[in-house]
Image 1: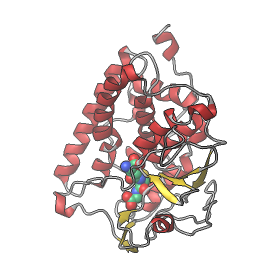
Image 2 (image 1 turned 90 degrees about the horizontal axis):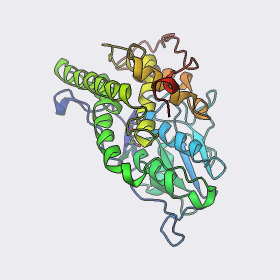
Image 3 (image 1 turned 120 degrees about the vertical axis):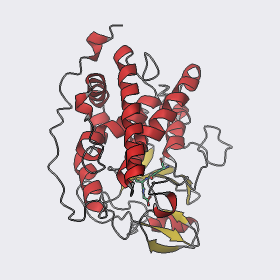
Image 4 (image 1 turned 180 degrees about the horizontal axis):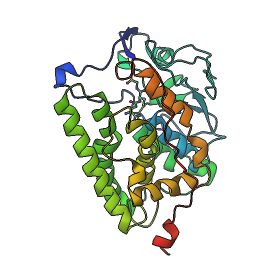
Amino acid sequence: MGLLVDGQWKDKWYDTDSNGGKFKREEASFRDWVCADKDAKFPAESGRYHLYVSLACPWAHRTLLFRKLKQLESHISVSVVSPEMLDEGWTFAGYPDATGDTLYRKQFLREIYTIVDSHITTRVTVPVLWDKQKKTIVSNESADIIRMFNSEFNHITQNHDDYYPAELQEEINQVNALVYHHINNGVYKAGFATTQEAYDEAVSALFRALDTVEQRLSSQRYLAGTQITEADWRLFTTLIRFDAVYHGHFKCNRKQINDYPALSGYLRELYQIHGVSETVNMDHITRHYYFSHTMINPTQVVPVGPELNLDEPHGRDALFPE
Ligand SMILES: N[C@@H](CCC(=O)N[C@@H](CS)C(=O)NCC(=O)O)C(=O)O
């Protein structure tokens, strides 16, 4: 784990000391947009863009889900990094289901960032949305990338499914704020905390938020009401990792998702939607966290993990008849 400073790699763990033991996520460094408009700086075109992802990472997972749901697989190509992220950061080393860098055959993901600017100062994160034509990074912010995938390629795919419909945007933004701060990023705040106080604060906010979404999903089928939206997919990528990784490795162990009747049924329902299970790779997920975070798990022993039974009936149709 490390970062680029003036184009040079520095192997350095997150600095929590200057922040009372709290983990603070940095803002993404590339925030441009692919647009449907053909005169845009980055116009949507089939075959022009490439995604660099880790199958372990919940943020990258969002983009893979949207690529699948919006039928973009033949239009946007993908490279998958190795789940083992140690002192060199994300690498293209060989590992089952890792593809290597299919565009440039580089060794390290940081070399993709230095193509853009050989003196760049940035963290080297996934996902990365790459423009093959301009040879630059469009965005490394998953929240933006899924919005582009949701709407900007519709004229190419003819898939008009909308996970961020205008009439629900306010509701979705509100749910996203709770889920992002206390659940998606909340598990990291608990797991990377280096003081008891910072951990206690993060873990109680996390379980309060899980109780809130459990209650909501007991009385409505999806987070924003009767239809699936991006809010659900953003929650999904944390829920699917929770019992296998966050519960143990990140010490989020007051409860498992399996202990929440609504959340566990909802998780299975989303998992069973066509194509979704193909985006979930439990080996990359467990290998990445337990093997890479040596300051949390110095032995690098990867636990066997709970049996998740994600293919069991979810029972949500009977609870919410149309
Ligand atoms: N805001 C980014 C966050 C991405 C992110 O933090 N990815 C993690 C992997 S789960 C990463 O690459 N971390 C490497 C690092 O921080 O050095 C997004 O949502 O796209």
